[in-house]
Length: 499
Image (cartoon, rainbow, N blue to C red; front, side, top):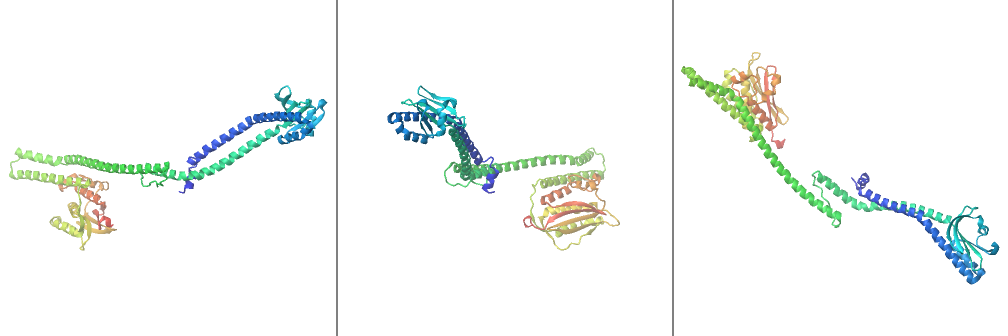
């Protein structure tokens, strides 16, 4: 945003506005004081000043006439009258007109009793000064009446309305000067402060970013050596220090979070392991305990029966051993402790190898296999982990395969899905209840406890598949088909950074 736009948006709270307001208030206060002084003090001062002028002029004329006679003083009297805007009349005995500078004034001065006397400003034995009003012209004036050395009387008049008019003109002038001064100062402030506002706005923007932990912007030092430049240097130093400190804090915090998370995972792993093992080992331990007690107490002396008891104990011990190992592997997968050795592997070759292992079992159960993918397909994954997934799917499909509509078979298909392939393993048989399709992936979940135990399952195999696929962020699942169940999982065709 441009500087002018910023100033317009923030004018009410900017330094320019505050400075303009302060100076405007100061100027207006001075002008108001001047007007008050002008209105209240100037007029009395001006009246006093003019009264003094009247008295001084009276003394000058009095001395001049005493030294030069009235006839020889007329030019000097005329000069005084013109220079000071006076109307002067000199009257002799019986109010005879000896001199006048204004014919209009002459009549009223010779008839002093017709003048409206309002205020006596000065008075002694030979002279007095009054504020009066001309009843004919309605003009206020200052009037001096004094005695001369020759016994004549002098009248000097000065209009007071001129004083008040001058005050009014002066006040109007002050108003005008004040408005012009405010306008000029306003423009000057905008021009002058622009130089100072720009760096201040820059510093404010830097400070706001620092408050949001953004230390990317620095103040551009101009080497002027003024306070703003020094403040900019200080803010840059503070920004660097804060950035360094916060970076260290983040690093330490990250390490601490990792340590806490790792410790929490280990504690959780230990608790779950103890809980799961203690729960799942109850049945085999009970069986082992029962058959062991039978052997000890010689429940049956028949050699074949004793052998059967021993075989059950060995079988249950093997199952416990297998379950504990699988549970440990599952915990490693779930908490990311299992490292993978990914490389390009031939998935079709691995499927062929797994089917070869189960050739005898397939033959004994009269299960047909439908799998015709002969060309190699390479995926990027850990061979041992994928072998466990394939083994689990294929072994489960063989265990639960049943005859449906005179058919009993398993089928394996491979489909291309974008940059992945999907392996699908199907077996004929009963469907899984819809509400259990998601539960079968939970550890130790067995839809049919008795059948699962009969078939030798631990309830951990599909949980391991789930953990492996989650590590690769690949999809997996089970779908009920018309005559059986189909399990699937996805594999990457390329490395992650090549996708």
